Image: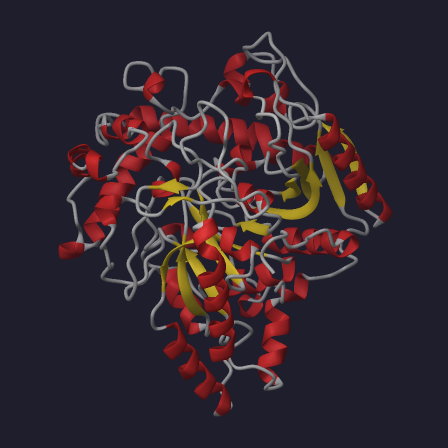
Length: 537
């Protein structure tokens, strides 16, 4: 329980445990608790044999690195050529891809054992606008170990979790030590928000830092895999193992960032890294309500409990020697003109933003899904269960009684309306606006204006503004906060929701992972707030 990758590696080196024994212990935990949580979709039946092979290598004096013999899980939208990759979709329930994802190869070459494929929201939460997080048709509803109950409230009592797991979370099993760490994927929030919700560390890398080849896509403009672990050091170790030594010819974006020496992020794990660092606090919207842009009603802001936590966090940063620049204003958040305000420019989502109704939202996600999903299907060759996004929608309609599209498929519908050729000009214009508001008039502008090393965000609230330009972020655990619901959404008498995890996120510009690893590690070492959820001893 809670043992770090470094500690596991030390135990393996000292012959106090074998990789086979580690796998056995993790398999026992999965067998004991996963029926309550649904954290796994597929368990690797060859995990013990793989562990034996790596134990033999170790006995012969060959140790591939810090991941040698360490069991990890992959979100089940990441290809494994020897295990099914379902994406949580019934149409892909028996899909065994013809090739490993590049990151899967890299992890295996580093000696990692893929013990399981982890739960996710179906197709990374681009199926239906009303589908609860962490639900898919293959495995049902995943639950948060911090409150592993379903919601009893009328209108919410369809089996969904009472406490969200964050994004299209694959972090549940890491939270309760089903494995040492896992790989998640993010398009906008699905590494940061599950890390926040499960009291984990999540590294959402710069888009292209880790190859996306062999990952079921939403859009190449924003998709990225990244590690989710219980400590910053573990996440740094996994990040290095996932990164390629050279650009991947199957993913042009991998040319964006240069890997650190030996793809090793551990030299950046410095407990004093906050000393002299300049950290910006973007108060408007992320901390305090704003009414700028095209709205007259207040938007954003923190609850009193969240505000107290962030005041504490800022105090920690100052005590560790950081210069906290408070406040800083992100131009696209405080802009008075709606066309220049990010809060008035959201991704097109749901049937309200179908073709002809999407004039005031970004089509980047729905266009990218049509373009990139069809291209991904093409890489499967004769293993492809379906030929196109259109075929998937038709299949889903024909198999509703079997459990497909319980919540509809509005996101797939609005994506499939796109014409990749005829809509390209509109897509490119929207992509330019995304980058203008999130980078040029967003993160880049505020970082440059105040000479910052990073921005500090409450929870996973930087997900949207960092996701569109593909910028990196790291979430670190910090607190447990009370959950309240009032009015029509109040919980019934006698049902008391349990406190929910709350983390903080450090965000910066492209390829800033080394700096973010250093800052987040120093903050983690100064606070050490991660704890294991009760009920899973």
